[in-house]
Image (cartoon, rainbow, N blue to C red; front, side):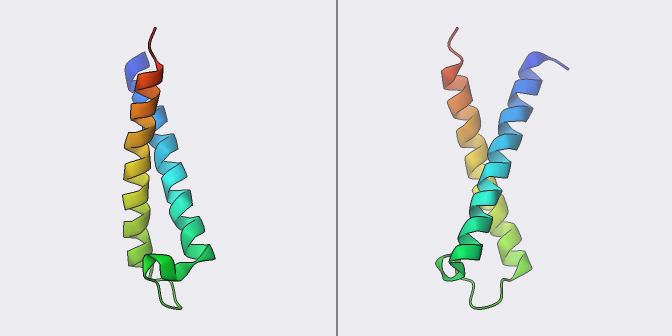
Length: 70
């Protein structure tokens, strides 16, 4: 696998995992912050996890690319 593809996959994946874990922590500690009332709706949590994950993935990739000035 080319180094660039591996670089992009690694940083997108790690950022996505960090974003999804952030959403999980927010929902567990304060479910009302993201609109959950009492019971956590699995569909809503999945969509919120993807939203946080995608944002963090692109942020992680952008940060990694800016830091790779050789």
